[in-house]
Amino acid sequence: MGSGDALDDLDCEDQWSEHRAYSLSKLCCAMIAMELHERYGDAPKLCVNTMDPGTVNTKMLIAGWGRCGIPVAQATTSYKMLSTDEWGQKSGECHGAWMDAECRDPAARKKLWEDLTRMTGAVYP
Image (cartoon, rainbow, N blue to C red):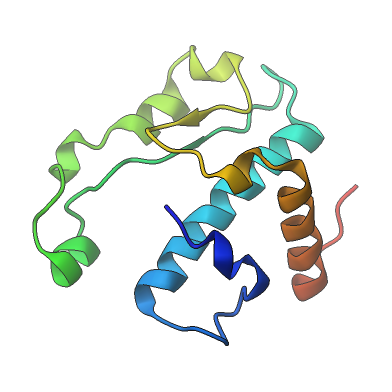
């Protein structure tokens, strides 16, 4: 996934590229999912998990890099995570081949949470 070095530049003002912004957004989503789990996860009442579908031949991938992933019809992980009893019984899981160091780092997740709440004005209990 990468772009951990961009966590201090969430607006990509210092270094912009479409790929960097996309990678940073995926990293932030995974980090926030893990932080939500730490703060509020209480399976089976509230389950917070994340996943990396791998490289899937979406319109965006094909436009940027060509057909180098699996067909969209085979990308069923998110459906399974949302609809099977197995996933409704656990929280704090990352499905897929990766989990960046930042996702496992409580201090990095807390900093991202604080940065995002400052940027957005969001308030959480």
